[in-house]
Length: 492
Image (tube, rainbow, N blue to C red; front, side):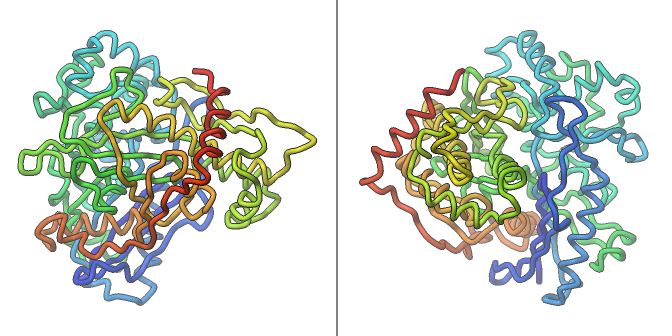
């Protein structure tokens, strides 16, 4: 028996097939081979075409099926992980009405701020755990105001993963975790927020049927199954945003456990049993994948830095001269801690929630033409990302997040020794690197939802620790000084 997982990222679709009996990944694929662009019709805007996601999803699944490493007729379930906060709008025929306004789009900040003021900060934070900020609900309000003809045709709204599930099954469903990331969920009343619907003027009918995260969200249609080379009737049995799913893939599901990821964006994600929030909404709280299971509170406290892997990619494309990421990492490692005073602010991918939705912009500071070269830029970029995460990390401590260890997948920027060692030595918290990824986590989540596993613990029994990186006491002062140098340039 096999489990299939999809990871709908900003840059590509990744798919993993897991042997249910061993929890081991036996096949994987990605599509396309080059990173998908983000459309930015205006400054601060970020859009992608949902139908392109669907086309890429089909190609990725076809690739993994064509590998011949497993019997595709024995796939028992499908789990989906997806880029968070994106707005997809469809009409009554399930046709896409406009490009998705994705997670790093900044256009709806004013709509979110206005709603926060009208609802009242105490009321909003105690019920929603966040300001509406620049999340999915505010994006829909922007469409309502500036594209009323599109809004009038809208039958259902959904997140990116909901859309892919709908294309596979014909059914539109939502979850409490997904609705909370869109700032539609009322944690006190455990339902869709009436205040949000009222202040924005949304009909409750726009929200799809709400189901548990681990449950049957529909079954693959015969025509879709035939095209993909799998059986019809396979259930979509799990859907979660990429950061809650990344935490699941690392078995981070209980209070005090912390996950990190460094893909297009950089995230630190801690689990709490308290319905906690940051009064300034710089750090965000969402329903974790197991929130409400056995009536327990499981809140994911999320720090997000928009400009992480995308900064590294920008450096590669514009400063790299055709070199690979590994070569960039090697060059960065040649430079001393602190990049000889060169500082980089990684805030060039939309408004940053950690900076109270300020459109800060990426910056290079302290540049000396007589000292600094390409390698300094590569190191300063990686250090700047980690330093910004450290800044947010300190904010998280005010919510009671006191980590003993951080878990991460051995992927993306954690493949860089400079990045990983900077993270460990700046935070003074060890990092455990595991052999896992988002698509594999989604596959195992699907196994839980389909009843293949009795619970999350059973699904994660096969999680493999690759290595642990400990802080180096001899480097503590150097990293602290480098961080303080970076911090003096941060004008917030």
